[in-house]
Image (cartoon, rainbow, N blue to C red):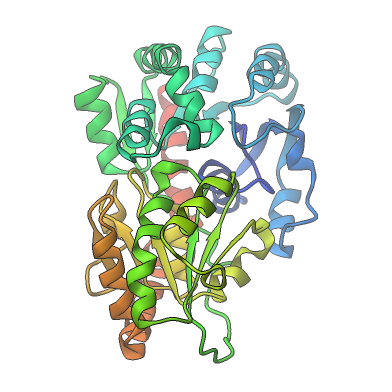
Length: 394
């Protein structure tokens, strides 16, 4: 069995794009790859995982190389621990290949001179994050600490990213849009394989719902400006003019104060919104508690939350960024909107809230699309083919 070192600072139960990607990859290749996940001590807490996720974790060898890191800022301790411990872990466990999930970790892998085959999965570029944060229109003082860090450290981080790309010869990109950016914006000359994200379809599926007159609109993401919570907030007043009992649920890590202030400034009653954080093991039930999923981001690759929500039966309204259009098909599985277009978001919500048959049709289309194309096993098999090619060419 192939032994792969998966370098991922984020791993379950901390949820986010990279941790979900890493978990789904472990599931998709559970019978073909022995994964050694180099992460933080947060991965040792399995209390919030589902039974299926715990079963997968049991097959994975966790190397907690540093204390748990917060979601907000990159963990310098983790990167320093990687420098110290990666060579020993490779040697002691006789790893065949290294798979990194971020440019900084990739650069460290190169810097310490490891000679085994290697691939880097790219989710988004620092340039794109910086541009999306700047275009969001949110004042610096109201930004999430991770966004402030992105803007402040951008010159240094960009240098690391460029050095990584200059030496990395094999990249997995999660979207075609990202591939174009790497080639045209960064002049990347190596090989890029586009592999869209996949999810655990045993975990994310429709559950039986109890009839409820109160409709719930779900926004699930970190509470950062480039994910578009301000677009959600600006759309709410128009929606409430026709549907006064709708509840908007903003779920994710981050400071709620700037967004609560904005809700108050837009005259949104407290009964029509709520903030929460959902443990990963509770997310299937959370999606099934909703009626519509929204993600009006300024930047995406191939978002896990849309995959998970659609697989759970939610029609989606999302910005036409990244490869979102592969999932959100206008008038079929939801509605695509332009970045920052709160009027279009409100229009889509009003259509769906006012037509149960339309919601049901789009719900079934969403389920069918994800289940037919975007399983963890499909993503895993395509990634395994990349592994095989790397081993053959080594």
